Image (cartoon, rainbow, N blue to C red; front, top):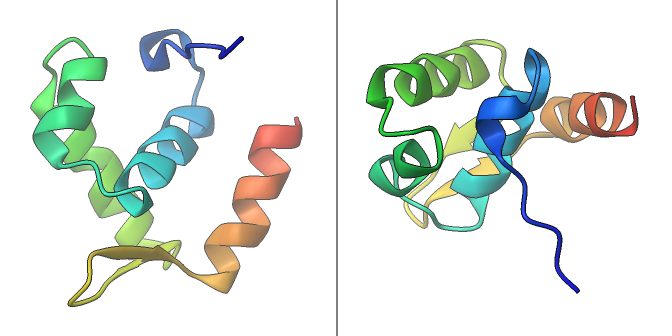
Length: 79
């Protein structure tokens, strides 16, 4: 059985990790915003945060998690 995550219920950086995972699996900003109750500003803020902190990088193929992003994602999701 698959567990469905409600990103609105996630606290702090766990929302950032959720957005990061969605981006690298190919979801669009609009698709991610739907999961956040249509809050496009919140999704845009997390994407800027992730880019600024070098957790993700935009490539021709889409988004990728950086080495720094992988490390921090593991810390956040295991907490």
